[in-house]
Image (cartoon, rainbow, N blue to C red; front, side, top):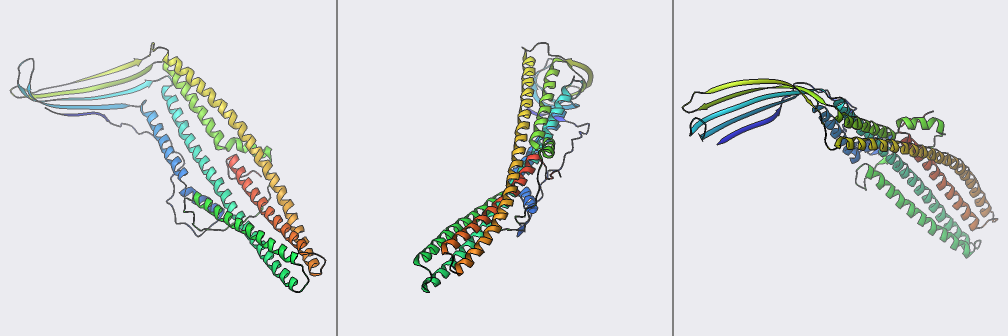
Length: 439
């Protein structure tokens, strides 16, 4: 016996309008440029970072789930076709019949009254879809901050390496002068030994700074999804642009735009819809439908038979008793909703604390920038005075070395303060969820 059976072929008789969202399609990875500004570095990370690609796929999943949530409550059409060939078929009239018989049925059904089941199911799925788009923004902001911090760290380490290289060159020149003056009988052996110690210390600091510079570059390359030894020149520099943030202006922006808070609010909407969906199980579902069936047979020695039938119906389904299952589901949904609200309140407090702490850190770095700027000026003057005094025999090599060390320390502190301020500004933008700071 051979049998062909096709069932469950869905025939779409309508067009589902899928909610349109902002495009998350990543651009094709472009060739790696030889140099990058900060904004270009961020854009490059957007196109190459796997976290964005992962979240893009999650958005597709959420969109597909939204479409599925609508499908169960829209028109359903099923076509069933059964074609059977039989040999020696036993029947009520005779045995040993050979031939074919075919059954075809077309069925359609449409819920017309769901008491909130359809609305809550689609609202919850829509909120989940929007939440994934919000989380895409959070991923992008996290990458922006990481790239910005790594970019400034490379600039900082380059500045520190330069400062330490200058200190090493000065120490080596000072050693040469100490040896010349020693040979002339002006300096003592102690002055030469001290100069040698300064050179050794300067070499150690320079080697450490150069190694930190390499590590900073590797960390930045990792964010671009590039090999560690990739070399890209950075166009920007550690430029200080004064901006004093105010909590009164910053916090309202953060409360409205911070992705974490927006996400928590959407989760609350999800659980509100979930609770409504569970409550709707107490009410019936009313649907209308109908079917059309056609039958045909053709057996050897008998006249073919053929007939068709149709039917229509209005159906109401109501769960009378199901062991308190719906009650348990409603209580579960209510508890989950309360948890989501408490989670939002906690996130709100955490966000406010983070914003205020970030602002305090920025203000601290501003004060350090001002202080270290003054220190560099004073240390430079002190070094010039020490060199003049040394040349006139009124100062020792120890005095000059101390002045040089003070200037190097002041320059290092200044570079660190500016870098800390710029990184703090990037952190503030991430904390408030936008790249534009209020004036």
